[in-house]
Image (cartoon, rainbow, N blue to C red; front, side):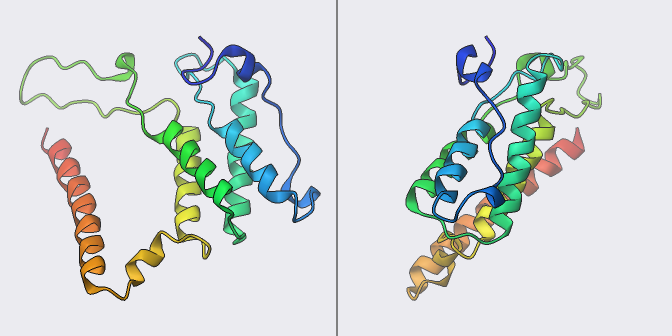
Length: 176
């Protein structure tokens, strides 16, 4: 299988699209969505030579999307929906079993850190997510500016729990 998300016919059809500077403002939302669709393809990174041209096109497309979102565009609903789909397809995954470190069974043994072979793409997806959330047209951060103190308190609790979960996870790996 060429991709864990799309069949080989879709992966084979991936090609570099125009730059945002080469299209009119009216065409930018459709180009943005087309670029997100390219970036939704999840490749198998266990073989660095497999789909190398397509992987490079995806990387270049991610860079272009990061630059575009950094320029503070206005997002229409379709752009937001497709962004969420792309984030989900790339970020909501687990390490493939062959990349998990094998434990020798000893409790005091240090476990080797796990590195995702797709990090070159994931790093750009995370950067795009950060730019997307911080964008002036993102309504996600506006939730924290609610008039209702109950909503602000609920959002603050969610944020603290997410942060706390990562801190606990980081500490538990440090103790291994």
